[in-house]
Image 1: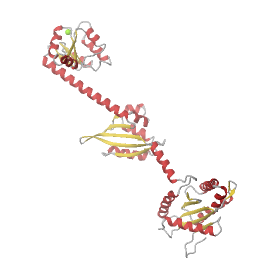
Image 2 (image 1 turned 90 degrees about the horizontal axis):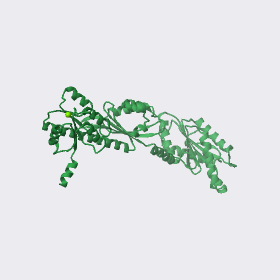
Image 3 (image 1 turned 180 degrees about the vertical axis):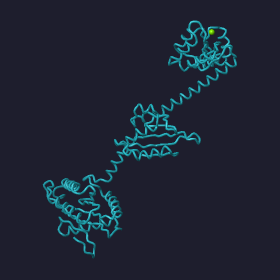
Image 4 (image 1 turned 90 degrees about the vertical axis):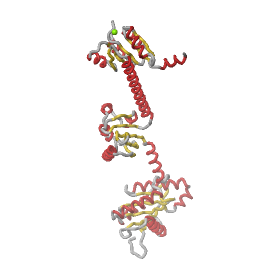
Length: 436
Ligand SMILES: [Mg+2]
């Protein structure tokens, strides 16, 4: 008995609305085994039953009833947000095409003519319950998809092969600052047009997106915005079996990681005391610049600069003032040399400048003027001088190893030190007469 009640409670319920008790009885008889039967004997009673929960899962509705007819009841039920999705089947002797059309227009799912056959009633009711179930499953999976889309930190868009947007989430809207009209339009090309305007390099981005749209593979790339935001994009085709349905694209804001990366990179190539490039970067620069010089048949020079008697300053005035001298010389170096020149701290009190596309007179002039500048500079009340050794890659030794340039400048610097400091010396190739 208890089991029976439980079973009844779990059965879907059907509200039968008819002013003729005989009809209610007949309909109830053919449905009572599988469904829980509720009844209303007038339009008014039906509306009262539908004014508050629990609501039935389906309604079989007579049309011709005194006072409030079935069409009016239907209209009322369809007008309420809470009951509008409950399927209504009209069961009526009023069986003209017009009546049927009117019923369906009001939102009913079906129309059964009186007199009815119990088998037909059972079959139709069963069909509509199963349609209702499928509808609910689809609604649930759509809701689940929506929740999934909104629960990610990424911006996501799904579109079909004709370029119509099927889904996108709020993050996507925010990331791309999509206005209402574009959202309503649901056209991918409009979104692309809007998005390109925000990118640092729209031409390249357009070529890439055209590639993506015609591609059948998974692609990842990076997008840089004019406002310096950086997104990574994961884009994948959507297939059902072998049929391509469209594409999904997923955007992750990686601005913070990129900023951190570039800060770390900057730190790794910078000398913390002077802010000049460090020795690690120097070797990279020489490699690159030598290759460029050889490719374009240009000259390249390297200056090795050393502060004279630096140990003496450190010993006499302390390391803090010693550091300050290094910083002053470095600052002067950055100001004095061209933007295309590379100023590095080689180590200790030694500095290095790489001068791309600089000929012999230009290099000697730049070095000599810098030597003079430091000689004239008041360095926290101290007089500081420097010695400079210069080396250059002439067109004669095209295959010079990068280290060779440093070694040559170092030899020239040694020569400047030996000759009394506070001067510029050029490296001269042994056994050859080179201007000094
Ligand atoms: Mg009637």
